[in-house]
Length: 380
Image 1: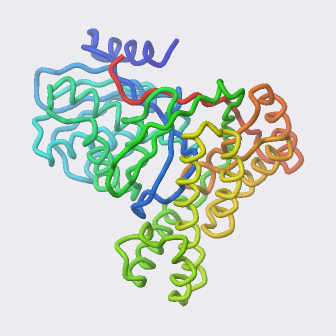
Image 2 (image 1 turned 180 degrees about the horizontal axis):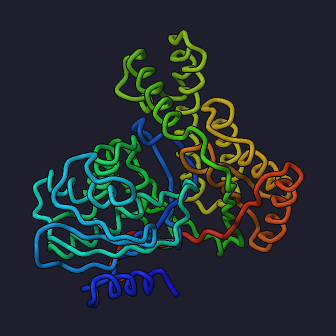
């Protein structure tokens, strides 16, 4: 059964009728540009085939009722304030709240959710959920909400209602990506450019390696990294670390007394440049040549930003040893997935190499799949 048919079946079994429609939004991986988003920098995500599907219809009375394959029981809520609705349903309530805060008349609705986006793998299952629900509600209510303005509302739902201090990359990718493209996003201006990313034409593939490592201290550590970056920007007298250029990096580091903070700044500044360099290579069709930039990004996350764990480091090392052109962790860190840029026919061999490296160390076996850049949020 597909995710779409699962959502439709859940709607019918829970609510006793057919939904008005089905709306989907994908998970994402970030090709390069980690933790740069909340520093007003640059990111380059693309959408995954895996998605959250919302089967939805307007309901008669006030309020919203949601069910999902995340939990057995439906949840009903009226208009609410941050913190009132808990767990997975908070992401749905947060979207309703953010739309209402922005002045929209949100239609009361019944929603059934189904997903094949891995949870806890660093591929933005939460943003996919928010984006699917937002897209469904916007269509059901005929809301005058341009696509370009939707990611900020979904992000506000997660930041304020749920309380997760994420940047705008995840929601932008889930809503604005296009099939066969990577989304070059300027997180300050919110301008986007759809960058050609036709792996098959180049005989290449991106292999996603889910480390299956349990996330360790991810919430507190993510927030700590963000606070460190914001404090560094304050000390340096710039609006955000995006304003520190590569040429000015040494001078900026000399103004910081704390060695940990210096490492955090160095990662952000060099990572922004790696995004720009990657975009330049992709524009000219030199896909293989982005590999070393991916690997350098991982080293920076490991050594300067200190957000990797043993499982992702081993996956990167094993993929490179098996012939990958480049490999890096993707996502906020402390677990999650690795991307490996490989020749298309090397997917099985690369997977075996990583599995063997994990077995030697007694790690839980990884799971892998090829990533094909897919479309963003849409009605099916």
